[in-house]
Amino acid sequence: MNHDPTAWETLGKALRSDRERQGLTRGELAQRVIDRGGKITTRSIGSLETGVVPRRGTKPPSLEPAAAALDWRPGWVDRILAGEDPHQVLGSHNPGAGAAPGPREMALELLPSVYEFSRAAVSGGGDPVLRDEFDEMAQRLLQSIPAGAGVAPGSAYGLAAYRPHAVGEGVPADDADRIARAMDRSR
Image (tube, rainbow, N blue to C red; front, side):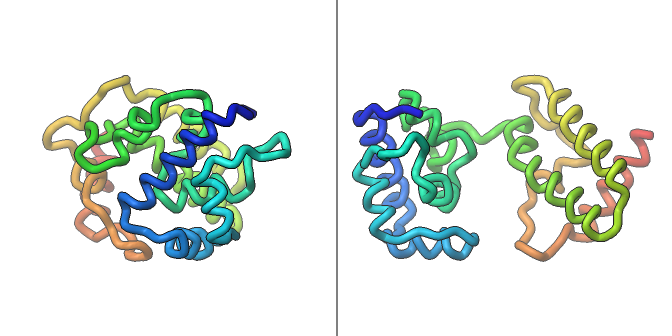
């Protein structure tokens, strides 16, 4: 782990800047972390934002939950600590600061949910062998996306991929039908 005080100061400034950009107080950010099942105090957030270098050989346990509560992608903290410019790392995160994520990036962001689904299916009595095959296929599908590829106009998956759904709402019926038809054509 990087113990360079300058890197930690840069990370702290990026955390504070993004929190403020989102209009959050330290208390509101702490509540976001707690709502997601984490533990953090406003004092811990203050330490992170001032760039306090951890004494132990690992990152503070509150760092990744705080970054996740700011909707940072996995790996962004490490990239900034490794010396990458926070503006470059967070560019696609800040509205208007960069291009929208491509299909590969969007699929990569969804992959943890795919794994969560397969684990939930097995915990409900599903076949673990099928879960493993499903996870492997999801990984292979992700790897098959060409770099820089876009979703073709009129893609059967286009609407479902880009239309947001409310948490807990599930996939709207018209999206589910469209996906089912596209999957039937691909067989």
